[in-house]
Image (cartoon, rainbow, N blue to C red; front, side, top):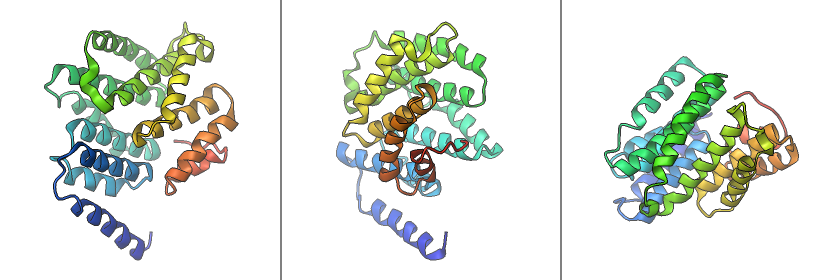
Length: 252
């Protein structure tokens, strides 16, 4: 990256941040979360980290925790460096200790466990992922007893994580029939629904996982490429999405 583009990016971040005198309303908080999410998915990790640090006391804690976890997940996934592995493990270890509200703590823990499962699967520790599966099931049963109306616009993200668990479950459960199971099919339909959401974060995650499912599990590469083409257009500075949209199979 040349000096001019670096300076341009820096001032873009600064101008955005100072344009929000106080992050108070829900819309302003959502705008900040979506802006940082866009930085992460354009692989502008340094800028995303700076923005997260600057907004740490003003953002809704839920989104700050989720975005910080997602940022460290992508840094690890793309680099596999020892430093990024350590940082991801630290964030995973700290994630569920940050919320004193019992209901929200359970939801935070479910999200943490979903990333932990992805981490174990990525490093081919299927036994570890299988044991985590039991913890996730326990959390889901507890959450079913709660009135989750307090989640508001976060419910879509919560429901998306439940669908992701069902799809992961088909991949790591030795007694599951994989993509042929009813649970798996239902999870795919849920992800398809959320890919049409007006929520940038929810729809992006749905497109990403649908792309991976169709390419890796369902063996329907054209359908998978369709989802990655949407992401490549949405996040033009992300070379991974561009490669996946072209049917390539990069290691990450």
